Length: 175
Image 1 (tube, rainbow, N blue to C red):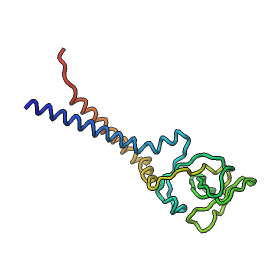
Image 2 (image 1 turned 120 degrees about the horizontal axis):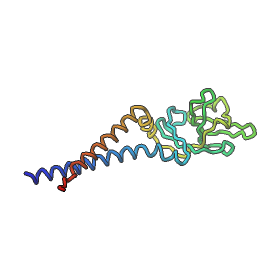
Image 3 (image 1 turned 180 degrees about the horizontal axis):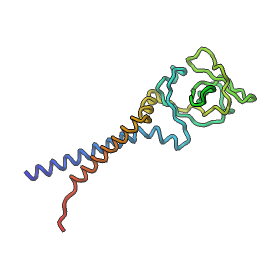
Image 4 (image 1 turned 60 degrees about the horizontal axis):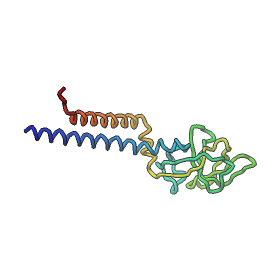
């Protein structure tokens, strides 16, 4: 009977340890694509409109590298602050770079015409260097209040499971 109890405790401890570790790894795997690139000066944005479809679908995650606007060439996909709303970030393709005027002419791939207003160089964030379709939706979830609470809860459960595993593995020593 005592032997069965020891086996049971050991099995539960191993399961708690494994589940706790897996939960922590899941949080790390989901958070790394949103944090690690920032260390290398990349901006990360989610696509919320279809102006660049089909090449960049809604829900994509974009990695933007800062680059001088003077260096932009026709065909580059860039991110910039909207002329009317500095809080909105737009991703369109460069049609023309007017270096002397310090502005870019852009167009969304899905749009019939060029953008109405030229983009001043100071509004340019950088060049799109990498996209991950559908990952933007997950990023939006993780960066929302609910996502942050969920991540903290998962970490809390993982830590509790590790504590339970440690408690079950702890052997009492006589002094």
